Image 1 (cartoon, rainbow, N blue to C red):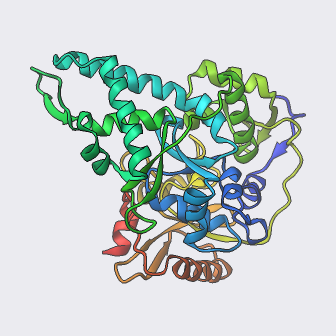
Image 2 (cartoon, rainbow, N blue to C red):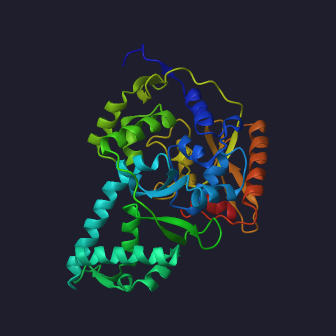
Image 3 (cartoon, rainbow, N blue to C red):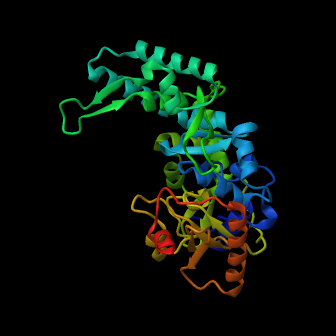
Length: 391
């Protein structure tokens, strides 16, 4: 390692979170798509995460502002993409996310479904699947946005059942509707529209849409890598591979296209930042944040040691490595939070960040409670501390 490399301290890495992830009050975004772009993509596996992650980064507006972005302006869209996970990204970035990640997932999804159809032995094949997909799209054109169950009721082919693993221990009969709908979504021919119920619901209505404009895959991966380095750098090749789910070869080609700079960290290791992004990061004003489970700021790296004490990990993550609701102070995770059945926001510190931190966290918890209103939030992936807080 060359000692001449610019040094990025742990404090500066935390400063970057406040500014670039738009968590410091002065850095908050005016638009939902802008908030999403600040972290490249918002996790969307849990319906509430999009809303709560956007809330933490917005200067104003309630849940209706996020609903407008998702369902009216369509400036924010959900895509099955990085790590085969559902994310919400800006419409501007969506073609790059589609080409860099979603296309490969769609190919794999189609291959898997065709394999199941063939093994089922009822004579269902690629032609049958194409006809079922066309019928589903035609039904959406006729009936407008509908749920999966409503679409199945309108399309007889979607009520078809097949047997997975015939003759094996895991043999099971299953309907094809969910698989066909998932495939249409992966191909970009339908998207998730307004759900039944409140903004915390994941029972979406489906909308017929046009696929995203084609972008060369290598160009798309380079664009994602460039944006990711700006948001999450300093970071490593291993971090980008984990975050994207790409092959190591694709990661290295994308980074070579971007041409990142190297910096050194306080522990003596080296990391990558975007080209020319080596200047010291000014400290923002002190800030507190209550981020939801699966928030991007807690899930951006394979190694999160610069913002999380390893001793606190067991309380804040589930068995599969999903982060739960967290409390942040100046770029460091200092605790966790939950919402009780009566709507009260409760939180617990895992250290002693000081009186100023406690006052700021209390104020942020009140802001969160006012924003959530009558809605009730239960994370899809529950963690030990979150369960304790609501017990």
